[in-house]
Image (cartoon, rainbow, N blue to C red; front, top):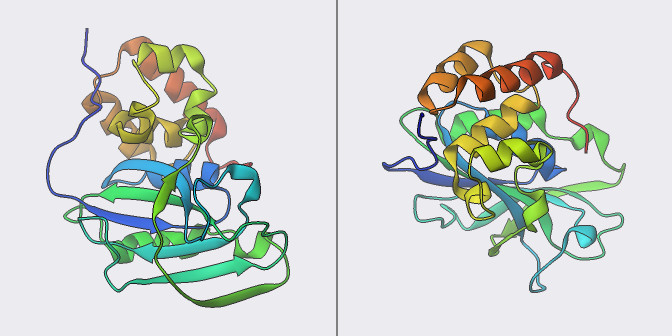
Amino acid sequence: MPTVVHDVNGPFKKATFGMGCFWASDALFGAQPGVLRTRVGYSGGTTLDPVYKKNYIMRSFDSDDKGQSSNGDVATNASTANNREDHTEVIEIDYDPKVISYEDLLDFFWNNHEYGLTTIIKRQKSHRQGPFYPAEDYHQKYRLQAHPWLCEALGLTPELLQTSHTAARLNGYLAGVGKEEDFDKDMIKLGLTEKITSYIRKHFQENFGGNLYC
């Protein structure tokens, strides 16, 4: 039986983006070549241990391979309405800079962020980077967790939902995100059974090009 590839070794860098609903961004970034791991959470606010229902604003920032911001600033597209707390829904990404650059990720962010879908009153300015707080377990790989038998078959624990390379990739493919040629390569490299591969392919094809609801 194939061994599922959860861990990938080698140098990597971190980038963190806020682009609206982190369920959607987790799927979008997870299926990009060069993205190794993803986790969703909150950042930029002043309160400790933020929770989902209190987070409404969006930010993005770059960080180096130690997880520190390369310039200390956070570029913000933020809604001023309903922000009961000052934290941001964000996705933290580990990526291989030899495969995908931060500039590529930033272009992907601007091409897919929800600026036009959020409230009318917005502002753009720079904020200091804050600590990253992982979101509750049920937010991690939300699309993948909609298939409980698959999570069990892959041996996914709450920790692996934040650290598994396979979980990041499949969370995107199940939502119909990514390119078919990348999908075909990953189905071989990730150590998946024929049953799992067929199941994911079916959902990838059915959802391809659809809207990422939140």
